[in-house]
Image (cartoon, rainbow, N blue to C red; front, side, top):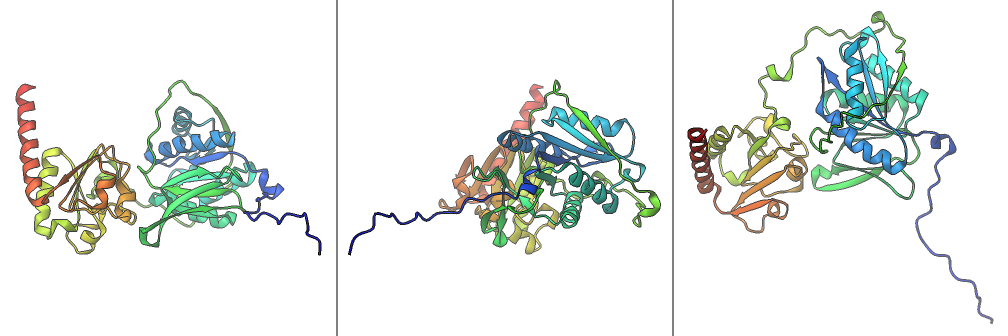
Length: 363
């Protein structure tokens, strides 16, 4: 019996080949969310991230602006260039003066079908989540929600979107292979704000909506801005003092409020604390709460479980206070203090109070 010279086939992942019809989709788009003359900061954050993706793919980065006719919408396009966009798709129509799902879904869907982007990014805001879900459904494509990281798969040029799963205990990376565009939403403050370049410019591609007011059932009766809603605005706070179960009981949360008052900070909390009713739900930081990116984050009695970490690890400086030297939060904190938060917090409050008083006298 003679031996064969043939070598067994090597096992491995089969190379993915994109359908030629889908290969025609090119470009990275970011939906520019705005209300009452102000662009939501998440749009600029996404342009910064979109610039990286577009450069890796060797394609253009575009902003998508929809709104009422006038100089405001064009100003948003000019700002989009300054944050990294090469061009801007502009849809102007009186019915787009206020956000409503039906006209915005039609406008964005028509743009995608006509110009065929390979990636479409939106902010995971109330507006963005509503619009992204309906557009993905209309286009019959995939949507990865609440992403914490975006990258390009080098093997097939696909968007690799990472998000928490299983209650935040794991991170999973999702790739949409057989559909375009690839869609993802990202929470405000997850991505870093890019540097603004006032010297950049770009071109505008205009498109018509093709709807009239009588086509739309929903009517806007009143607009209540966030700054009048009497709710905490943690995603935009420069300093946050947060507490977890290590604070022992709700009465001890007064120590966090005292420190926050001296620092001019917001007070945050972990999910177990919110579920226990110690603080209101709007103060929850983490995978099922708010994502924050303050200059300073003081975490007292917080272990650092991944559910909380994904909501605050982008902070510039993290100071952790915990009596367990092996607490996971010390693995990623900038500074760590091992000790009893109920003793350390009053000391910090007094030290900062004296510093502020001294600075006022000197100034």
